Amino acid sequence: MSIRVAIHHITRYQFDREVSIAPHLIRLRPAPHCRTPIESYSLRVTPEEHFVNWQQDAYSNHIARYVFPEKARELSIEVDLIAKMTVINPFDFFLEEYAQEIPFKYPDTMLHGLEPYLKLTPQGPLFEKWVKPWKSVKDRSVDFLVRINQALSQTI
Image (tube, rainbow, N blue to C red; front, side, top):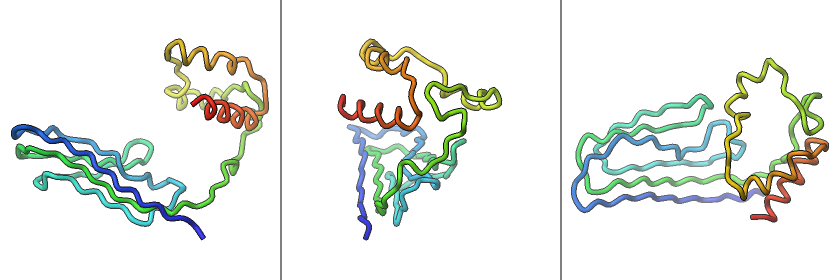
């Protein structure tokens, strides 16, 4: 028997006078490829006088683009969702041979698509201090991921 979880989320902006509301991109809908089954979903936006166009980004995530033609004193975004919490094995994946051990190098054919994820930017002294010991680790990839997640959980 699985557990069902209900989520109710409201974001509300109230203004002291009528204002023009710029178009909004709302990303509050589960991706179609999420592993948690979604039993129901609803999104309600006010003011009720609006236009909505559903789009998908490059990763197939849903985006609702709302346009508000009239001025309003409030903007409200309300989401209701029921998700079925199923047991998911976090180790149900396959590692390519080249990625069995940390550190590893991606094949040149993959580097172009991965470029945004491999670009490093400074994150500040606390982050750099926390990451420093992990930079020289040599380990099996799965063992490394388990250890770094445990350490992160303990740190937080």
